Image (cartoon, rainbow, N blue to C red; front, side, top):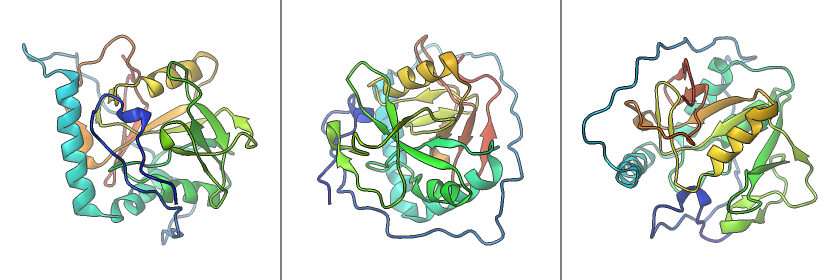
Length: 245
């Protein structure tokens, strides 16, 4: 078992220590679900207006983390299975997607049941690898059961022998998302750089994963902040009308 984690997604949250990690020992089945059919309904995007005094990003991160911890404590493992059902039925999938997922740390909603379900439908899975503090994440192929190494920041990741791939579907963690696709990250900038880099020569589908409690009002975005096309929670999927702007 790998030791306690400290994620680059949490660099701006001092004093946080992640849990021990074990490989998933469950297999998820969703009765009545075959191939994805339904698509999330589009959302209108109002003009962004903000209160006169906005909380700092650090304060917003701490507030969002508390809400996420509470949701994780209340729902246990059930949220990951519910999220998988939403992703498999309400996110549009192209044939033979390469899915860039993530290994959950701390109280992040668990994407592994959704990833396993996608693999059962014939899609390839990949996990992110940190290649440097100011570089985009790289993605390496991974299959459930493949060994993982403790990468930078002790986050489990495939080893160097796993092939590098470019994901066509990216499952994106975050502390909070708004209904227009805006994302509040962890302060390290890894996913901002990664999504921006992927979009320069590719059109990946980017899906923010969060508890329902992490879906909130319009976020105060900066020029470097990147957004997502869809948001999926344990209850529903939403399609953003103009991600990242």
